[in-house]
Amino acid sequence: MTTLDATTATGPRPPTSKQRRAATRKQGWARRAPLLPALIFAIIVTQLPFLLTIFYSLQSWNLVRPGSQEFVGLANYVAVFTDSTFRTAALNTVLITAGCVVIAMLLGIGLAMLLDRPFRGRGVVRTLLITPFLIMPVAGALLWETTIFHPLFGLLNFVLSPFGVDSVAWVSQFPMASIIVALVWQWTPFMMLLVLAGLQSQAKDQLEASATDGATAWQTFRLITIPHLRRYIELGLLLGSIYVVNTFDTIYMMTQGGPGTDTTNLPFYLYQRAFLGFDVGQAAALGVVVVAGTIIVATVALRMIFRTFGREEA
Image 1 (cartoon, rainbow, N blue to C red):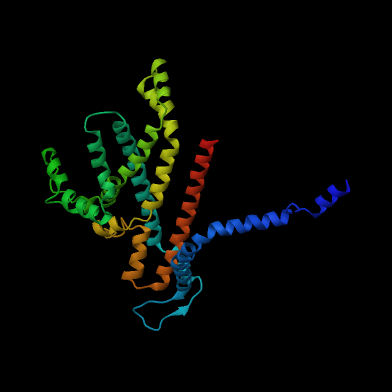
Image 2 (cartoon, rainbow, N blue to C red):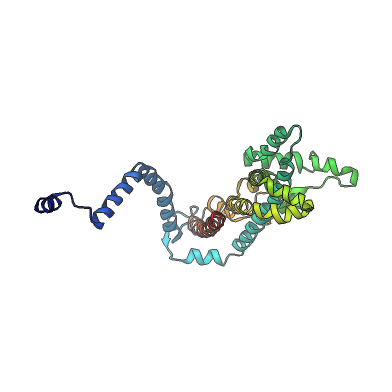
């Protein structure tokens, strides 16, 4: 008995809770260590310019007036929120984003339903439908402006000429609709791919059971397919909104924000203040406001995505 007690007393002691936490922390840092260079690089190229932008947003500095730089506090932010053009640009941003994302999603659902059915040449059709998403936004905007919407050489006027439509300047007469159509053409393949992935993951036995019970095609689509596609539709709407809200190329190439400010969104208005007005202070304040708004939208969107997937997994 005495020998056993002595062995127990001299053997290795179990680690305390403090030692376990230290070991866990050490293992965590060992796993994260290879990522530290990327994290430091990301901080340098993103956060330092943002801090410099905040500094400039507190200055009154116009490049066409040398020596005019001075500290003005929050005056640039007050000027941004009282600027009627800023409110117009914010409203245009909402219209362009909502119009593009909703229409592209509806078209994407329709095309995905067609591609989910077997037919000859489905692979070729699928590749052709994906192509617009692979084209550069600048090239797509030029294609629509010069080939489709041109009042003299455009294909749209040629197709509509038998119906009495002749020489309509679509971009100048319907600038907002022209921008939304070009963006819908570009983003519909993205929505289609997401919905198609959802359709192909749908359990076929449920569809067969609904057909056996005598459900119509519309009832099957409304009561079984749409609930199954919900998380894919929400993911497409949220990711599309995050990307489309920053649209610049299409507006710059097709309308230059005009006529007037009819198609000026926040990124294009920021470009105008910085590179056409040379007002560094107000452009920096506008940039900070846009970044803050985008972060809020992205945070809400990501929380909705995580909540949706968490609910589905539960």
